Image 1 (cartoon, rainbow, N blue to C red):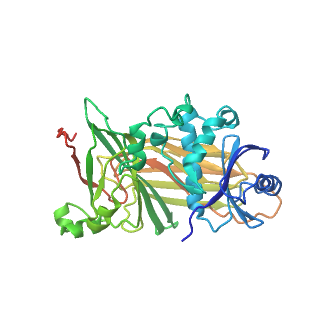
Image 2 (image 1 turned 90 degrees about the vertical axis):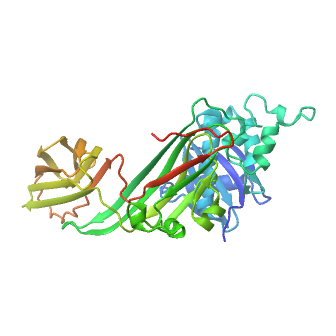
Image 3 (image 1 turned 60 degrees about the horizontal axis):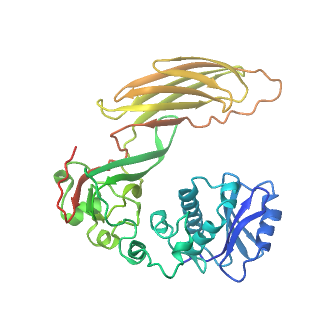
Length: 420
């Protein structure tokens, strides 16, 4: 199984000049950055692929403002892990000085070297949590960490070596609160006749916790495997069962208990965090149906009629609905009529943009447009008719059918929790 064994990490300017770098293995030298500058940065397709191979080395790079972050490996590296490491390193540095750019790096050389020594050990990723690192690496007094006469921070030792590294002890709130949101995005490909060719739903469970002490939380979902392990069928659960195809959890989740009894048990970090990500490919309930009728009249006119019907319950509504209907590049002007909202022709991306502020459930809205094209003598290529794009938000609705069955909170202080 491929892992990440980084030879070095470089922070480069847009010209490819080294601002700061840290080598973790003997094969890493400044010449690796020179090769990146001459053979990758100066090529025209620098943004085409962020992974390259040169002279036996793997170059993985990303950009933050006016800085390139480059990780170089010699072994067969896990590219996804390399980019995950770089993105978390960027977020770590931002947590110290808010913005990662060339100026902020030059102003914080000492601090960055301290952090780079902690986040990688012989090229292997280590601690990347800002909450933990801020306990013993501070921007104002780095020397206090290596002063032998001072006792090390007991909290830092607990966080680094203890089982709960994402939450410090001694947190107290007058009012204990937990907020939970399920956010989903639907990707689908539909034919002109309304037949769904391909669909999947990607979602995440986001939580915001303000709880005292060291609480233990248990989350129950209508996951098919979870309910089957509990001996509960769909009728008793009060709804349909879903199958989660790909699930990834925050580090706070007890994976051992999840694999044995399919329960999401965790000690939450303080504040907002992403508890889990998932993907579902079966049984997706589409919130909208789009029925387009596009007629081409010769070379100079196109008639567009688009109907959109919401399929979610009447008591719900969609907000921020934006429909983008592609039109040919040689469009001169468009006359548009809509039953609700506002629509206009956008020449920058060759589309009719229809914006609906509020779209109630079980409602059908329509757009009728007459598009005039510029007449040309050159032979006209057949219009490809790109797909219609639809952006929206539907509060209190999940296309996958995922729902929270329960959320239990235990804490040794025994404080009460009240569901809103």
